[in-house]
Length: 149
Image 1 (cartoon, one colour):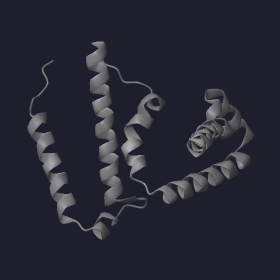
Image 2 (cartoon, rainbow, N blue to C red; image 1 turned 180 degrees about the horizontal axis):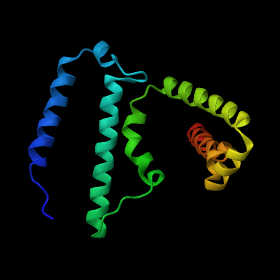
Image 3 (cartoon, one colour; image 1 turned 180 degrees about the vertical axis):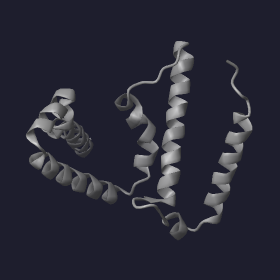
Image 4 (tube, rainbow, N blue to C red; image 1 turned 90 degrees about the vertical axis):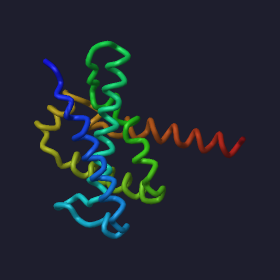
């Protein structure tokens, strides 16, 4: 089946629309709510993430000669790195702690039968300390090596 090449102009038009919107909005307007949880800035960050995902798939597919659409966890960190880096450091710490506290409470009160199902599917969703400690160890080791350097 031949791909309809109209995607080229459609994509370019959507990118130009995004560019024009971002250029005309103030920082305050970029924080304008879009639905219950999103803002205009979040919409743009979401689009950036999904475009980076498409880049990843295209790169991997080109390398392998077949469509490569990897598991979400395999590529998500690389894709969101520039988005994570854009978050002010103290705000990133606040968000991480709030999310960890909220998830700890949710897991503690979660129905046992459903908790067993989730744990069987992916232990890491329940035993969050495994993942947290892995990265905290890395961060603390990096800080320690920087102090002694």
